[in-house]
Length: 369
Image 1 (cartoon, one colour):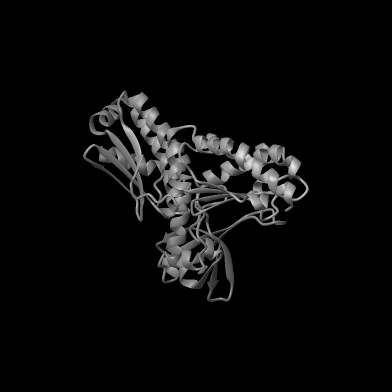
Image 2 (cartoon, helix red, strand yellow):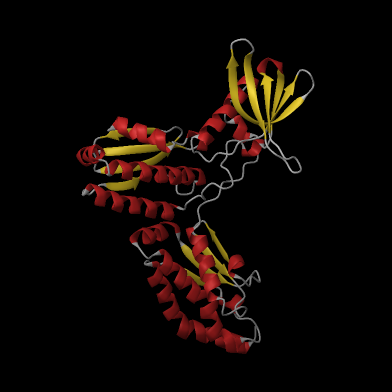
């Protein structure tokens, strides 16, 4: 970096940056620390572009993203609780919004070439907002069998019982994936498919009903009836994803998205009940747990369906008005519904198979009230 670049960078830092820094903090609605690595931004030969390019590359998209998030108090609260520092630099030669943003341990890093793709402001703004609002990801699990082993299925019968439970829960509306399995028979034959039922027959005993889905080039599907007594072993495929959600399941919400959904439910219930009922999350909810947020997102949707229908019913509306001032959504190892004082406590299990269907939640809420 020569004298011309140093002078241009220093002039920008002294004249343009103070105003831009104030705009960032105003958009964040709190005094968030901003660190700029001026030395890496001042690339040689482009000092005449600094004044135009740097705001468009870094500050304008950052301010736009922060304003979009802090549009309400929920967004402002979420940002204050997660964003600790902003770092602006040019060290990775990134030249697009999708590759410039990283958010780790409360530090938002914007790392982008300072004079490349200057006018792609909207792309960078959307990238920053997506990263700040993103839901947490599941941590890497080294043991690929951990998901299956957590079910404590210690034999052929108990494993088939778990597989049957997964099928029943899917049929009841839980978007859980159904793993394929192979039943290894004493005859040496193997039957691969999805377990549907364990049928009971007084004369022939227990029989496994296995669905063999249609495959490429095969124009039909099979159902195979396997006498349980002929099964010697069972092979469970895709064990690492055992009990997980289907690929088409709704995405994991971020904590901010979840709070906004509950705020919308609260507004709707207040209108229907003509009462100041509040809808909140339990204090033990882990904002960094994808498993917790997935469970709560599903529970929030079912709670909205159940409570709005109940509030529109004459008897249900009366019960909600008389008994409740607060509705609390939580997550635990198992599902539960209870009324404590004037609070309706809705608790969902962490594993998808333990989530409450609409029918289960509806029955539990009516019983509790």
